[in-house]
Image 1 (cartoon, rainbow, N blue to C red):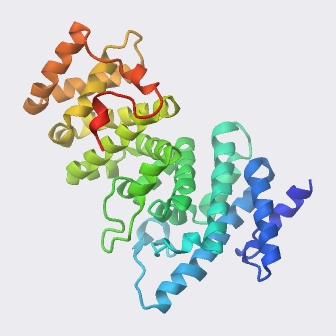
Image 2 (image 1 turned 60 degrees about the horizontal axis):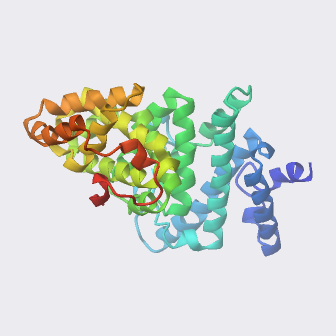
Image 3 (image 1 turned 120 degrees about the vertical axis):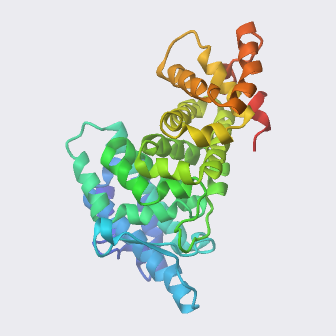
Length: 359
């Protein structure tokens, strides 16, 4: 009860509170309370989610944004006024050094709390009547306009930002559409964001270094891939986008059992592309990725995943280049000499297999 009563003191309605206090002892107390909230998301109310997001925004605005302005550096921005009103803009300040500061660490901690609360309310306790209150609180504080730019930030901020987005797209089809429209897919696929004035991106480092971030990214991609925005990206930036997807699939494969569901999420992404924009997939799908696709088609137990893999392979066989690559792989499968992709996925670490050579 004491922690629950003190939680509102972490951040107030306007972003001020223990984390922005002048006294170091007050900020230290805020960090201790935050750890309790992180361990038990039930302690955090919808109002406090809104306040936490306001606090993160305040720390970024009064820190790196002001630093960039004082140094005469322009801050990359993306405006979405036509979609969400006058204040609908994203800022992409340089957070590389700031994330190591006390303020940066506090911002990362607050974002972790928000992410864990959304995960608890949306995914673990998805039948609770209060769930809608948390979604409203997130959007009321312009949560998407804060978290989507943070996907490109260093890992300490990007990982909880991705968890927030993953929870949202699983909870609401409308949120998946918004996440796509506001540029999250471009960031995840390594494309310039904002398009007019690209900001530095650490997405490659985050997806390389964090299995959790890879899982969140796969979920976001799987829920957003069938949007018009996603299909336009694969049509216009097919080679880059497919290469990034294959890279993510390779890393998920190496994660083993822990991210098996996430590998299946990427199979769904490839399936959606094969049905709606097969051209880029046929042109740029590497041979190494064909092995697990073919092996999934040979599973004895028929599942949605195996059916999608079959559909992908059938689409690829209509392309001359892919058909030539697939022929010996399919022959090996039919002869029973190919490897079991599910068995490989269940192995820990960088086990052997055709995907082992991909970066």
